[in-house]
Figure 1: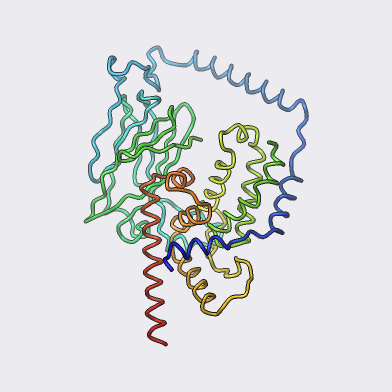
Figure 2: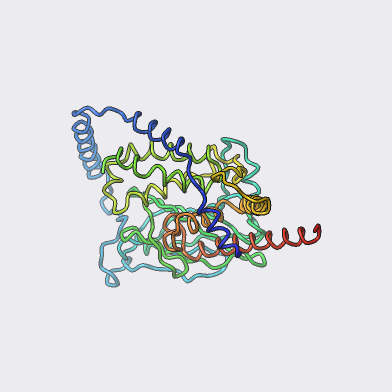
Length: 218
Length: 164
């Protein structure tokens, strides 16, 4: 029997505990908070008031020549509106943040490495796992960012099998909203593989080294 | 669909998935309950999604993979009794125990990929969407996991041949 056939049989025989299922259903359906009719009205009213106050404050406090966080859609015709995507090269995570193809300026991109499995397995209950900050950057006027990866400076406990770095890439937008993506980065001879990432927050996609996927946004 | 209807229809499936990825009945129960409590507070927006169950399934996997939380100490696949009791011969039982042990030696992400592929029957694209990573990463995790399981299987076979 092949490993695949063994796994199919193994998982095929797995059965959830019906008692546990009943306990969960009872717990989550009995704990539902009662909602008064006036609460949604109050929440909606407060939200509208908060938006109005914020809008007034922005209008009063913003400088005369503001730098827009998102450049208008004039693709290729106005300076600063063309997305710049740096070429992929070793020892860097490069890329761009766009909104429906237009550059997003001022977004923060963080690259953090997770400890390897051995370190995770030694962690105590409730212990906070410290991630290793590989680097971070803020997108430029053309939406691009470049984050250097100093492979030799990464502690061994963050390397999986000596040649793989499991990283979490976090995107934080100034206008609100964030996204997270996990990907391995291969390391060879003290150098990290070239990695190019393009986030499109409008289309909710991420393209990693040419491979496009859906990007869950929070 | 109301939250209550969703819970009655899908809790069993979510619990099965949580057991498959965590390898521990108690952790699975805690994970699913915690996730459903979060779902309850956001149900109004979740039920409007194209596929609410896919979203909740992703929450369950993320909860399990969230290393910062209390599950970090759990040794996965320690319980052989995850499966229905049934008449079984000694050799099959030994093989099953060896497979459980081998699964326990994989990384959590590798085990999760295998559970999503072989328990949930998802393809690489769907697994990538659940895990929030690329299809290439899914294939890498799967091939490494299967290679590790094959290597451990070969090792076990060699040991058996040597002792028989």
